[in-house]
Length: 564
Image (cartoon, rainbow, N blue to C red):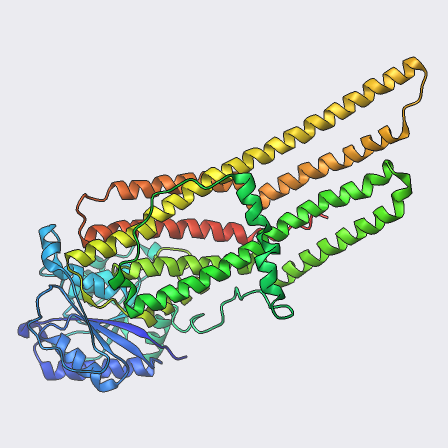
């Protein structure tokens, strides 16, 4: 198995007394990078703070491998004290360390978090001791454990061998302090000798090489006779959107979210993520239109078939045409259902929507240096998460200076994308789905009242005819038969549509999500700093991931109902 675009974060001691022997440290770094290559790493990016000491040794060793570029992340906007060795494809990012410290935060801890958030594995030169200050190598190891990524560990001063720290399952409740205790006692619980096989397994757990290059399972609908498929999407498959607009009412005017800042839109990584997100969203919308419209057609067809099939009760001469028409409706319904069943369209739609959402989250998270992958989530290794993460690897990291203006503009856009626009969307969808559910139940009630009225009228008419010694017209009995068949069919169609598309359930969920997103926004300070934006974005991402888990699970269990 080979791994491409691997993001390797580096953290190491910069004090001479901690590093001890720079020659031995460099030899161990060379060994570690050879081990990564033996594990299948064919290309990657080294992400480092480029401080004095181990960082410069790591950059030199990485440059010698030719595996890929180096990305430097500096904790302050000022020029770094250490000189960045020239290499191919070098990129640099400056964080506003003064802004972090003005908010009571550690600039170096913010830097370590930025390094680890984008990483697939951490390469650390670490003595195995607790941190002597925030943002050191120990904190980088702790953050990697919390993120669920492995640590390739070089331990000075002896530099004997390489070790691999594999974070345990999130349900194991294993803490960083327990790791320190085990290192002190010489106990190996999550630490083992680093081998190519173990490193490959650790990278595979990050989804590298899994689904990243494979064709997305939710492929576009197959083109039929050239432009016929596009014509269908421009006309036929818009039926559900028309139904939703008519039955749900007009969209409420919502607060506008901030536009993409020009300097963000010009970032190559953002351009790549935007293109992938746009394409995935287009595909998901097409599949959603097909699935929902087909379900609407199938249930409407069931009512029509019932109406046509019982029409000879009123017009006896229509038996053959009615049977032929009913067969035609049933055949169309069978073809639509069997095509969707063979293609497993409900699952493909679910996969495509999940991919589009993951890419949307990664795109906003990228601008703030956080991750959209929840290590405790249920889809960390699913196709959508793996493909979105692969796209983010290819995008690299944002470059340039995160000064006050950039933080404000990029942060406002990211929160607008994750919080404001999504709260507006869920509020609108909640209200419209509530109206649809209410009107559908109103239709049920209206049809039922009409049915009862017809029954009572028939009883009254029969009594009157008996009293007048006359016979009821034959067509009146036919109307009764037709009504007795059509009314239950309408009720069943409405119930099936509610079951499949869950208007009431989605309305409640949307109201809940909008309220939670509004709460996240209300907790933002008046003049937010980068860590405030990151905290709000992470909270919104966790909420969206949870909602997507539930939506995807429900959608996967809802294949089309034939109806006829």
